[in-house]
Image (cartoon, rainbow over all chains, first blue to last red; front, side):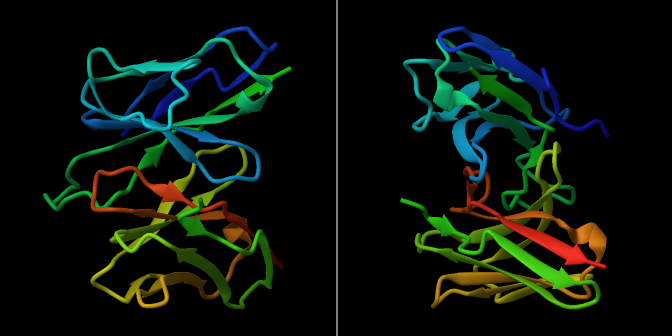
Length: 120
Length: 112
């Protein structure tokens, strides 16, 4: 089974420029998450989608960050304009609503390798 | 305000010994707790979880203990192996399919 795919793996931009990250979740996973992980911190949720609807975007800085999952499959996260403090690894994760065997998913997420952003 | 806290940024253990990683939480609504392991340049991978209705869950060398009254959980790795060297994140959620809240992580080094 293919894992969560993310691109690009690395991106270096100057402040005030824009950047976009792409994520393709595991096939069949209804829920998709974007997390931001700043060096030395744990992942912090930016946005959660279920199919193509937003479930939680309360921690997304909406003045500069946007995300979409138009067809309920892959997703794009955009930052415009970028600030120095946006330097981080952006992690995409997906999860099924139910695990194999039919039991409710207890919160296990499947993460991609991440996209490392450096803002200069 | 950190709802999930891992107060030890790093831990060194000799190969073959027990590794104990600790995690505290403040939100009494959390009912699922998970541990993730992360190697450099890779995404976190799920290791083990526990529901709030249990106080222990074991999977091979890994055991998670939950003390709800103390709002504390710990991950025990016995015996520790050099391949266990990684950053370990504690995470918690309120029921399944809600976003995980992560701690800052503990870097475990297992010395041969």
